[in-house]
Image (cartoon, rainbow over all chains, first blue to last red; front, side):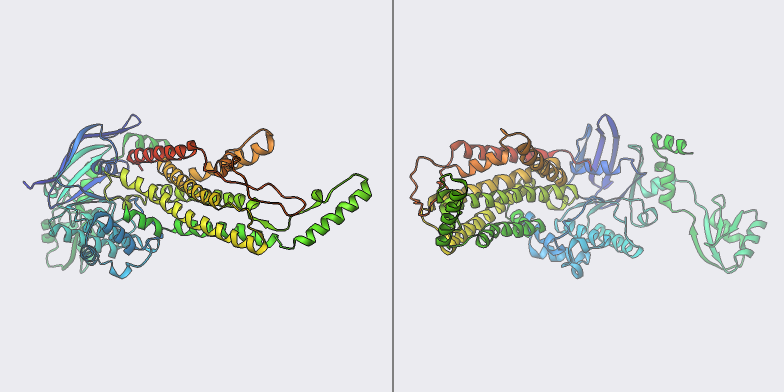
Length: 297
Length: 289
């Protein structure tokens, strides 16, 4: 087992008599990308706040091999400052060299908008400036809170490439996000939080093995004919705009063999692995949400 | 601290406050320039004519001293009040600017990137408040000195600098600087403590409307905090002899500025220490939002 970068041991955080997280224990391996999944209000951001020490821990403790840099989703930058001024300020504050700043700027690809004011930066640009700050601080553990919020697909792809690059450098990255289909492409470990409690934690392979199976979506040379072939084989399928949807009861090999010589141009899962993990361990709303929903209906 | 000071100087609020302070600093000399004249003979003549007319009309003996309107700018008489007004304006700007700088960063959640580490946020937050107060004091010192210089020049141009108290003016400039520092630390500290600029600005506006305007208008014996502050800032010294000699029928009494009570400086130091400590504690509080 890898060394641990961060370890939560029976952590509970309460505020005004309400438990925000209760008895949370999980570990983040060094050099891994760790996903923290959970519904809104599950306690993910509270855990991140406890990690960087801005909220008091009622019981338990958080151990970290080095001080993590947490980039909160709601964090803003002083509007009138340029990205370059902000980086220069951080450089002076931390006593860093100019070379470290230049390297971080190159690493995150922010050189083209260094002289733009922070108020004029797009969400993706601001996210990258934040990452540059974390990189120039030489943080061994970087925590990203909802990093893909407000990013376009290209921005998400660039961010994930950066995350993969950070992992390649041996840094630990912890990501808290709802962008499940993108997240699963880069994560090694996952922890699910539901109503302030950990419901599952471990490697993606371990946790994923317990997730419900997914249906398949196929694009064939003739989808209506493919549906007929599958009907004859006793496999239920429907033709949709996305393609031919096959339920989770049939395996992909069964489907392929039932289609005989029909060309399968594309095969994807109906629901991503993280979406299924989320459904299995983290998406059920907290009791008060359920009662509100009930009241509304 | 150097990095924090450099950052404070570069912030938009600093530029805005500096511009407003410069405006305040030149307002008094410009207003005096526009409303004064060196034509004293004509004023004396007009006062004598008016007094004679009033005597003829009312039959009451009225001297020209009672009808004389001073057209000149007399530095020994008006200068200290003008400087105090400018110093008060700068203190108000330092107070509001400090609140907007620190409280605004907390409210807009921009504070995170300004700390080197979240765990050690008391020191940089306090440094930000002290840096603001220092910048405000430096600005006040420069602008008050410039205002004093302009008023001296104006007195030479449109009136008289006769009997002007140079030492008193210097003391006034220094006390104005101290006031700007204290107001700056109060504003910045309050911004950190309540983590909002809006609340502090509303509190200051409420004080001005209620304590300075309403209460002054409604309660005759009421002495507003602003009036007390002006008296402390002026700290008139009645023990000294003024060299000012009135050369016209009537002059307002000249003002001699004193060194001020030791309590005044002790209070400023106590406020600074208390607010700084309070800001450090407040910055260490939990950050839930």
